Amino acid sequence: MSRPTKQSPERGSARTRLLEAARDIIRAKGFHATTVDDICGAADVTKGAFFHHFGSKDALGVAAAEFWTETTTGFFEAAPYHEPADALERVLAYVAFRKAIIGSDLTEFTCLVGTMAQEVYASAPDIRDACGRSIFGHAATLEADIETARRDYGITGDWTAESLARHMQAVIQGGFVLAKAGNDPELARESLDHLDRYIRHLFHVAEEDPK
Image 1 (cartoon, rainbow, N blue to C red):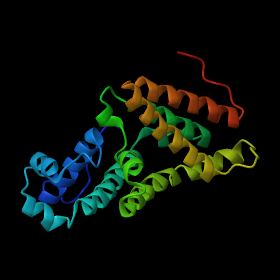
Image 2 (tube, rainbow, N blue to C red; image 1 turned 45 degrees about the vertical axis):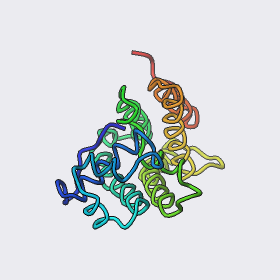
Image 3 (cartoon, one colour; image 1 turned 90 degrees about the vertical axis):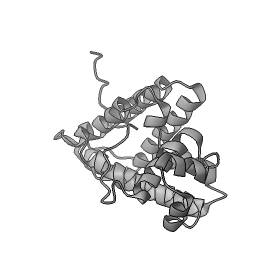
């Protein structure tokens, strides 16, 4: 996703610069390939200052996931997909918004917590759990609109708002993986187009006419 406006009260502090550097470098290189020296150099902070704020690289990973959650929460809360009056339109607008913020630079639109979770799920459970809280927490923000849309459109079935919200994140994260594997952001956009079609199929509404 494109870089959100940062809301941290510590903006400009050494800790915040370290977290911002970690966010950007890990998205570009991955967690294991990113060194403390890389982060300190990008943040213009000494190693002593790094270990003053974070007891280890893993501790930095947990804090980076939490920082990502804090900054992206405000970004999505202010996004225009909340504006439609109809709940299903809000869900579809969310998908359209996720597609719209996919730019040409993979490191700018891909997900920090998704990147880290794939790498460290077995080796660093504290980081994995922080990433999980971020991903599942964001998914949960969609559940109320999905449930309202189910009620308004008379949709029944063996799926839940929670399961669809998680599936939406699976498609988005999978699209990021495909974009990285193919070095082509269009692969992520294509995944979002299919997600839009899938949701319309679930709710028995027609696909929008191409403009």
